Image (cartoon, rainbow, N blue to C red; front, side):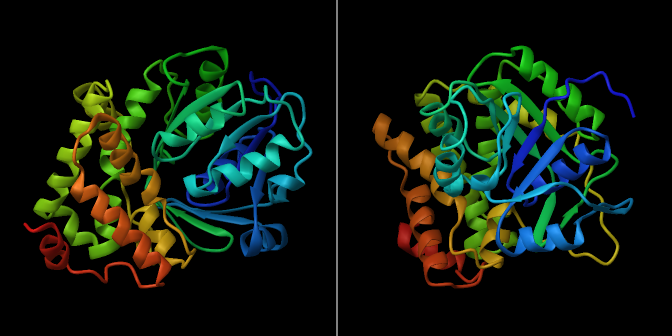
Length: 329
C-alpha cells in the first residue's frame, strides 16, 4: 500500500481508550507505529494482539508493542503521541528523556491543559492534541469505541497557538487512518473548551452518571469559566470550538457491550489507584488561587475524589446531598 506521507514512525505511549485504537488504526492503514503499553495490558497485546471493537466490526491488530517507554529505542525521525493519563506524564518523560533528544516532537493526546506545560519544560517541540472519542478501556488488550464511521476527533496544533508543518502533516495522517482531524492555531483555546466538559467527570466519579444533570454541575462550570476568563481564555470561543468539533462524533452502540462512563470513571472502576481530577478540577483550583477567585466547589470535589480513590471506594458511592451539605448549599 502506497501513501503520500512521510515514513516517520509514530510512537503511541499509552494503550488505553485513546492510544490503543489510534495505534491500531495507524497500523491497519500501513503507517509505521509502535504502541507502548505496560503490565497486563502489554502482556495481552504482545501475546494475543490488540482488540478494538467498534459498532461496525471487531479488529485484532498484531502490531509492534513495547513494554514501557524505557524499552523504546527512539529513532531520529520519531513522533511521539502521549496518550497516558496526566498523572503518568512526568514518569513517562523521565523514560523518554533518558534515551532521546529534547527536540523529539511530542503530541499531548490528553485531557486538560497541564501536560503541554510539563512537556515544554523538557522538550522543545510540544503539540496539543484535542481528543474527542467515546471509548471504553476496562480490560487488558481490548478497547471499545462507540462511534462510526469515524473513530473520533483528534485535532492538532503546536502549543499554544501555532499551526506549523508537523501540525499540518499529522492531521493528514490521522484522517487517512479513520479520524476527523484538523490543524489549528487555536489548540489551547480548543483544549480549554474540552476542559469545560471534563471538569464534570468528577461529579460522575463521585455520584454517578445522573448527577451530571444536577445543579452542582453548573456550580462547577461557573467557577471554571470565571477562572479561565481571568487567565485570558476566550471562554465563548473555547466552548464554541469544542461544541463544533464534538458534533463530528456520532455515538453508536456496540452489540453486547455496555458503555460505561468517562475516562475518569473508568480509571476508578479499574481500580488504578489514581484519577485525573487533579489535572482537571485541580487546574481550576490553581487558576482560582492565581487570580484570587474562590473555587469551593471544584476544590471540594477534587479532595473528595482523591479520598474516594485512596480508600478504594467504588465510583458513584457519594450522595449529591452529602456534597451539598459540605458546601452549605
